[in-house]
Length: 97
Image (cartoon, rainbow, N blue to C red):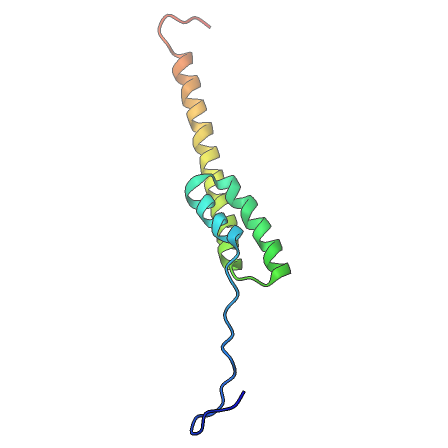
């Protein structure tokens, strides 16, 4: 590498590592599509990032956390819906236990 006269020599530019695809999918699935897949993709992304050195561990962690939160919320809503359906069906007029 021959420096240009009058300019200090600079090292070549190092491009940043790419984002892990599973980390991006973890956040998308965890927040918007199907939260259990966000948990799966986030866990898988963390393992791949540890091996390859890619970026995105923050996205993977956020996908796992959001996936668990939404999975728990969906579970509570589902149980409440089942409880309301049982109360409504159990209190129908003309139905004897």
